[in-house]
Image (cartoon, rainbow, N blue to C red; front, side, top):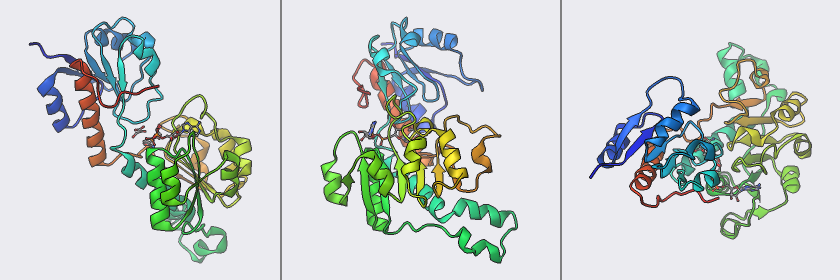
Length: 322
Ligand SMILES: NC(=O)C1=CN([C@@H]2O[C@H](COP(=O)(O)OP(=O)(O)OC[C@H]3O[C@@H](n4cnc5c(N)ncnc54)[C@H](O)[C@@H]3O)[C@@H](O)[C@H]2O)C=CC1
Ligand SMILES: O=C(O)C(=O)CO
């Protein structure tokens, strides 16, 4: 029997490629520039499945792809894909939940610590040869993390791992804002579900961990920032557009809040003239929430398992239901 054919828009670890090859024939896109929409449509017309992590897909892309059964992304976030549009043409969208939760929560705690204790800012002072008596003056003091109040917006898989670290490691109080109540988290961590405004007003550290949707676009803007404490830190591990960056830059420039620690941005990579780059009260990382060798390999394998299952005509484990 002929093997199904899958398209890989990017390379994958050898172990993952070998798993795919056991079940499918494959083509890998090996050019530096991404395929154009027209090139992608043509490729997908001849594919049973596709791994499109760094690309996007909607109804228009797949409407003439009779063979196509699955589009897999090696990410948990799927805001660049339209699961409903794909489903209209019997194409599953799959993502990679669970396997990255602990790793992303670790990074978020790195951001919390760096932003609160000014690690990135003062690291730069040391590197630049500016370590003088003045470096430890009160105006450069940080904020405590231990026993402070963490406000988490988006108490999902990753949000709960952040809360675990906050409670078990730092004895923090936890407020959360989520679409639905999470009674187990309330019981286990003493987390309290509150309205967004209350969370913003009462938290010392506000962490964003919601998916990017119409509802969460610019969830944090001028008005929301004005409700935060002047000593508060805003941490974004979700997606850039969840924050209105213009409003955040204004709040950081006028010290309306203490600082921001950000892994995701409205435009990625950040343009070289971006105002964030000249602010001191920010920690910036280049969207590395899940970027450890082990976790990225686990994500690629999970994405491959979904891809292979779909291409073979089975129902993949991680079908995105919207
Ligand atoms: N920086 C990075 O590298 C990474 C970023 N992410 C981002 O984090 C997001 C969350 O991932 P998971 O925790 O796995 O997702 P999840 O689906 O388990 O959790 C998201 C939570 O947000 C809540 N939510 C959704 N819309 C909301 C709204 N309008 N208001 C309040 N709560 C709302 C949901 O009820 C859910 O509990 C992903 O969608 C992705 O965009 C995920 C992994 C790595
Ligand atoms: O999985 C995701 O959604 C990411 O942003 C990268 O891990």
